[in-house]
Image (cartoon, rainbow, N blue to C red):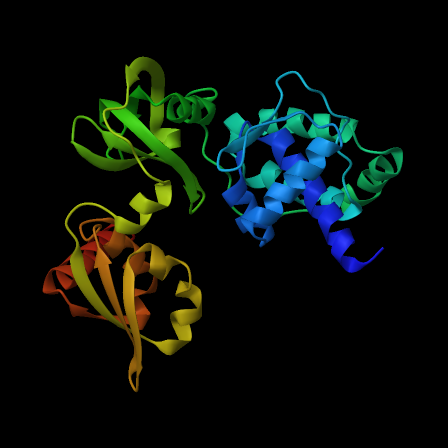
Length: 317
């Protein structure tokens, strides 16, 4: 059997897996996924139909399996089984607690369809993989908070949340959730706040209560990355001159705080930021390496740093 037919068998099998895992699959999406022409996908789908697989749909529309049609359990390769073990370790450490139990039951179902030899592989290897986290995750006030948020996104209905702000004020908000994301050891919800008439992000562990409503979204939203990239609110331009020897410690955090330009000079590295957090977040981040940095602009940031230093000194005298 030549390489062409082996590739076709692999692709047709993968298409069948896609049909099993999704309600509708577009030929265009399959063509992009497998890097082939749409015409090739049409031929592959025809191959499945000729093999007796009841596929509903036509060229140009989405494909799906006939409702109620059952297929034998999917067989996993050894590499896929090993990836499951690694992913499970990551989920144990970094997944949100409201998702952890659901992931565990899902993995139990996956294990139940593995071959006997693969089950032995898991037993032999799973204790040889570990993920170390130096930060304990925050405790939630609400059970199943992220599943509730995700359900509201799927149903396109508003949420009512009771939220505790960073200064311990409790406020009630009606929001239209766009998505959730994990950053710097915390889970956040990105949502349109109907009170502020703008997009806001809320830390999930600060949600005291959450309620689903039957009120539909007022508008359609794109992907969460569209809002994470664009940002909202007024931004302040900041310029810092930073010692080169400290740059290795700022690799991830500098982007988070709005880095737009980085220029190496004889005196150090000049960093330019566009930040919304000039009042609190940015100064407190800067204070962690302030002995290696000089504020070039704005003057207001210099004053905030000096004020922070005075307050810190006052507490530790």
